[in-house]
Image (cartoon, rainbow, N blue to C red):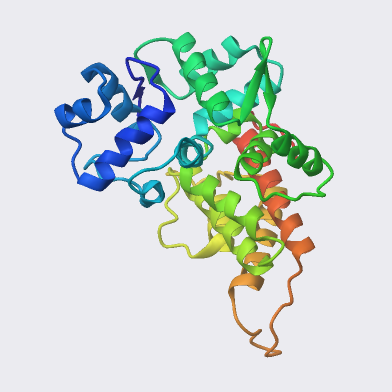
Length: 322
């Protein structure tokens, strides 16, 4: 669905003030908000438009529970911290950074994101300026000449992920790492739910390997069901059954029409088996439970990402990549 850009690039602190009023007064009346902020109606409508873009308020004007953290009289630091929580989860913003880190100019990055995510209104230059204002205001990055300079903490985390020595407490770094591993084009096709499951898996793998594996497994199964909507897998339970249905699919004429390669089917089945090791209780024959380590959970997530990338490339042009 296309996203219409706001008419004005409004400051994040103003947006936080608008949210504060809405959350504490259960009202998004334009005139009340205009009087509260002493800003024009156009500015207020732009604030509300950004809130809708970032999924801070829904179509019923109900605010996300995170907004409660603002309280009634937040200082500037708290306002920006809350806004950053939403901005760093916004997939087009992540894609903009990824394109630039992969050698596109800021303007080229904005143009690609503008088209890829079907933005409407204004133009890609406005989108570039909007994203730059968000990134600099929240200290996610600074602008150095015509380039983005990521926050030092994010750069540190990202440098660690290159060798799987990851310490990914930072939500933003996790999203950038997932996007870099998959490629920006593939990352942009994932649903928000799939991305959130993958982010959660990285956050959990050190302290809750079992939970991390379950999160990554759910993301993989959701990816399969969404990607192959033309195959009816509504009665299939779990990754293993979905994978088998995709590999053994027959078209309307009864001719075998494999949706995935046999090697991908084997890897997918293994992903399903490992997920079952995490999600199920005692083994039926031995009455023992699998002990799962953080190292295994970390490698499982990497395997899921590699397989998602492999299947995506395969269905695009039948290329074999892993």
